[in-house]
Amino acid sequence: MSSAAVPARSIAAVCCIAAPVLFGLYALTLGQDANWDLQNYHWYNPYAFLTGRLDQDIAPAHVPTFYNPTLDIPFYLAAQVLPARPLSFLLGTVQGLNFVLLYLIGASVFAGLAETERRVAALGVALVGVLGGGHLGLVGTTFYDNIISLCVLGAVAVVIGADRPGLKRLLCAGLLVGVGAGLKLPTAVFAIGLCAACLVIGATFQHRVLNAFVFGLGVLAGFAVFAGHWTLHLWTAYGNPVFPYFNGLFESAMGLPASYRDTRFVPLSAGEAALFPLLMAFDPSETGEIAFRDWRIAAAYLAALLTPVLMLLKGRVARDPSALNTPAVIYICAAMAASYAVWLGLFGIYRYLIPLEMLSPLIVVAVTSYWPGPVRFKTNLAIALMALLVVTAKPGTWGRVPFSETFVTSVPPHIPNPASALVLMAGHTPTAWVIPSFPPEASFVRIQGFINHPSDGDTGLNVTIRQRISTHTGDIYMLSAVAERTLAQSVLAAYGLTLTPECSAVVGNLAPGIEFCTVRHMEDAS
Image (cartoon, rainbow, N blue to C red; front, side, top):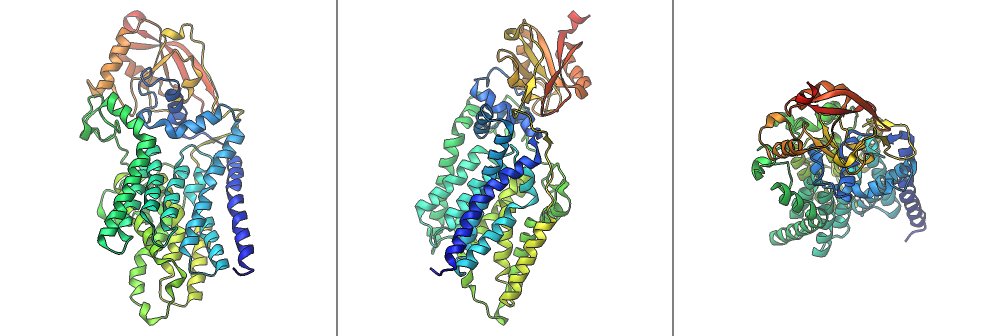
């Protein structure tokens, strides 16, 4: 090892230690997370699971009530003992670990370079990878897309960490991304993509099929460990292991025969699909609810499309391909292309594509190195493109509030008889985050929202709700947003109920405007 390699290795180690800490500090500068999903289910779901409320409440967090709560449990438990600032720092630090994995992946891809150049290049693409507009906007938030990305990037690092990955290595890689898919179902697009890309690994067709098969076994094992209990619960309780999604296929009587998927951002035509990386680069409303800007995926898309064309000219210019680990480049490009294709058909939601955003700078540098032309020119081009991607990135915000002492705080109104209290919920504003502050004896039932509506007819949810209301003998209340009081009143009428003027504010740190009102039967009110 050369004398220059030792300082380079030390610098890389320092960067890999410092980067997560810096992201933890960055999270503190952004303020406390108060995103819509946190208000809806990231706080309620682990509380309900840990306190045994799965049968006590009915869909208080809309559709996400039925998401696997396992991913939310560590944060919820940590929030019981840590103040908001240290918890945000910890969250940002964990999210900053993506830098370390990107560095390891880059070091494997640039394996043919001299030691110092290899580490510098790997650090460079790792830095550009974590400075994307999508990732920066998620730092310190509870969406967890940039935590689950650790499973995806970890799987990539395991696969390309050896010249010829053996079956044990592929099994471990599959296990990693399977864990990610089990914890957050949209990660399945990367499980599919990384598994499909195993078909490019191996000397013969039989070896490639075996590689994909073993990787797939790892995916199934990881998914089973972290999501098996939840899919079994959904299957047993609702007759659909991913309830309410794809209910047209599973035909659970508890919901409508519909997919329940959010397809707002899925391209509607082949032309739109072909241009989607460019469309979402210049118009973030094509792929999400917030304004942000990032051109990394678009740059990787264009570079990948141009590469086959430009390589036709390769014979005219001498090129030494030994600087890159070509099998690793092929695997990463194939895995990300397959994952992107599945994502495009199912979701079109940018947050679910964060691992690709992070890997896109590496893909750009790697594929452009195969273009014809002098090495110095291509090196300068790669540096210029990386600088452009950094300076043009603009993170968005999912909602932040000033730091409180504890991460989630709310003060409910007094309930005289909580053991016999039935709290109804209506509207589309997320309000489930205040439920853990109420007396645990009270039950919460959503009578209208993104998961159900009285007009849905005799679905299992509606039948259960009507039975719960008709047989209830205690006090009834309504928890909803002040702005949706008229909507709440109209939905209550479908159950023969009405609001009274007796309303109190539910004060909390994440959002204002939630009220708690007494409800009466219409015949009693008259």
